[in-house]
Amino acid sequence: MSYWYNNTAPDGDIAVSTRIRLARNINGYPFPAKMSAAQRKEVNEIIKNAISDIKLPGINALNFIDMSDVPDNERYSMLERHIASREFVLNSDNKAIILSDDETVSIMIGEEDHIRIQVILPGLQLEKAYEIANSIDDAFCKKLNLAFDNTLGFITECPTNLGTGLRASVMLHLPVSEGNGDILSITKSVNKIGFTVRGMYGEGSGASGSLYQISNQITLGISEKNAIDNLKVISQQLIDKERKLQEGLNSVQTEDLCMRALGTLKYARVLSSNELITLISRVKLGINRGFISDDINPIKILIEGQPYMLMKKYGSMTESERDAFRAEMVRNSL
Image (cartoon, rainbow, N blue to C red; front, side, top):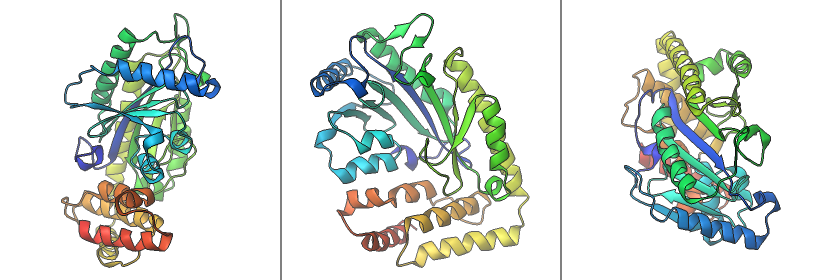
């Protein structure tokens, strides 16, 4: 199956993915943190019925999945594939998720809010991702009595999401900006204009593999279009800057660094998660600079080499067994 990370996209040399998330709640029910098990099940059924006949261009089907039926390895692999949040997979009692066949669309039911619509696409595709998310939101607005205030906008559990309920983010691969120590100044600059910089897995996660998420913080008093337009401008500036920095690298030294990483991945018999992330970041840089064939999909290898993705495929295993399976998987991919 072709997941979001299997495909190339605009500005994919630096922009790894685009995500649009909309938070919504149904009138007449408390927020999930205060809901009873019976209320959770009732809301699950209401939302399941609401999506039963939603048709989306390019999306074959939306599949309702009761999280109580999902094994632990599969649940945690959802986090590694970026289709569910950490909080959602850590405690999935009486929760559900709606997924499109290609996992471009994921709708978490019962996370912080009743409904979390998420669309994730490869590269920099903010307008397209929002168009898909908005069409789902429109369908829900027609079928459900969503909590909305004429002054505050959409009502959400966390006050920071009031208004549009929109969180838009772009994940960027910034190895040279990181190496130059520019991330701190980038973080300070975007914070001043209502955006934030986070690690690979969003809020609370550290940076790894030179992957950073840039996302909006302001949802009240600003339209969805303005938030998305501003994020696109910032993202494009960071992309252009990183490209120029990569072009200015010493060619021989950079090629050596990238080819050593590729060689290790091709022949290693044991490979930890941290080592994979570091090496695959260098391989991606090598692809950008033309030292390594672009037939390789480094993001696919990175995601499918994560611990729970491996155990989803091969079954539960110890850390040392995973390291061996990971090395084998990477060798086969290359």
